[in-house]
Length: 444
Figure 1 (cartoon, one colour):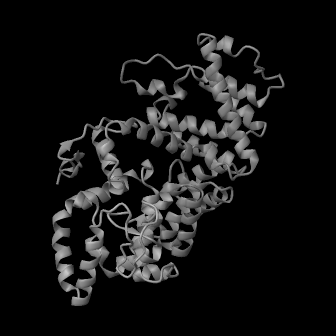
Figure 2: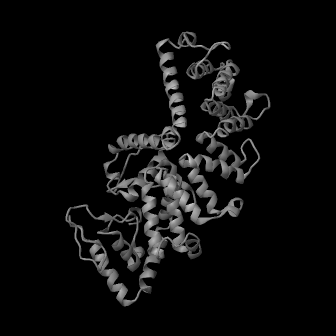
């Protein structure tokens, strides 16, 4: 079935909503993201399109904040965060110098000590590399992406040598920068500027120089290269070793990747399967603000609700399957709006929309399987779910509590129709029938 048949058309009150593209996504992706928001916040789409620019800006700012290297290094040894801060400051200074000298590089570089015999500072060497390495050769045409690569700069060798000198002074970010330059060459030019040499091999070698000095960002990159076989022989055991070095410095990406490896869900990682350890790594990455680990944990808990053996391997962190479902939904809620979880959530949305008719039929069949007592209990609960009064009553049929303040009870993360005074009541309600009728707004 074609993708377009599953696209949420953004209809509220019978009228289509204009959803402009934003955050660099296509219009179709933007529509889907709005639909995903509507999964957990039915009021969101009603505020379109006025809320969209604000939401887009908030999303972009939050995404950048959570995923900045500086944020990821905040738990590491100060040496590494200081190195990154220095590089970031020099980049900003280089832009300012060029803007105040009408892009005259020689004027912008005036006063820098760059000669071989001079006692050059790390600041001057990195600044010189950024200024002179920024020059590009003239493109041969509009499709000449290779000319945009930093390796295409006529000053590339000189700019790289300045970074090598900075690295020789103990500045590991210089090696990381050289590795990144070669990866830009791979991305933009596929090695066209390197006379048959493989830029990925050079990138790996330079990242490894910094990683062997324990730079956590470089350790993570080397771990990833070894795991995937990029510019080197694939070696999962060595990859784990480098990931652990980055993890020890609080680098969340490495915690997440270690969690994925120890899941052992694919043949290549089966030998390293350790579900307890996997969950521990995901939990730590989640604590460090890495939302893809909320995604992974949510999926793990939902899997455990259906797979008793997996739950057993995890040490049975929940007392019964319903606990895993509730926890899984909560974890998936935690990643709402995060673009790294976007693709997975889109698949969930499409699956829900495609299965709408089947779910309706299944719900009826499930209802008929209930005992007379459970049917009566479910009917009472459904009656409570229809209560649209300002002060909601706890949806658990065995609980008589009512909100003291409107909105103080926690809503169901999926359907948004019912509210609970406590997590215990939410679990009880799920077990006694809500799971049969719980549907997201697009399934109504």
